[in-house]
Length: 211
Picture 1 (cartoon, rainbow, N blue to C red):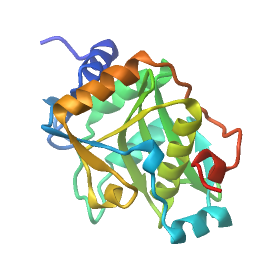
Picture 2 (picture 1 turned 90 degrees about the vertical axis):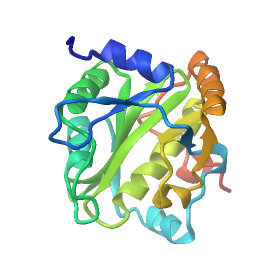
Picture 3 (picture 1 turned 120 degrees about the horizontal axis):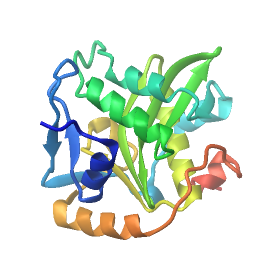
Picture 4 (picture 1 turned 120 degrees about the vertical axis):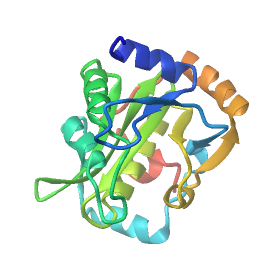
């Protein structure tokens, strides 16, 4: 059996499928192609009043692509609410390779120079595949997600794939769409060009379309 390569992984994402392990110690990967696909519409992204207050207070320092492997390993670690994850060492290896190629990115939240949360994903054309996020302190992953969306909007992205919809993501406006509708949007997005912006060139509110 041939090992999975980053090039094979890119082709899979471009056709609408993605890999997961059954648990983080499982050496095998399984291809997932759900009937309903989770997306987070970038022009309908919702930020609660309480989260806006925290963002304006500047409780976290936000960085991009400075601790990519730290973010993905943070997403893989068990928590009280999530005793196991689907991110195994093979996924870590592949996504670190994609990061080295400039195709996978992380948005990180830091506090007192300590990584406390983040989100990572894969960029193809104007599509961004949000893989997972983690938090070691209250709202750290939420702040990272808000900053990710701001950068995607400013960079010209038109699709943020969340794979599935959780209660957590629903609060931000995530919805499910049928597979065929997702594939149509994916094909359009991949043909477009977008730029992942590590730094915002406008205030956060403006990047998110807020006045």
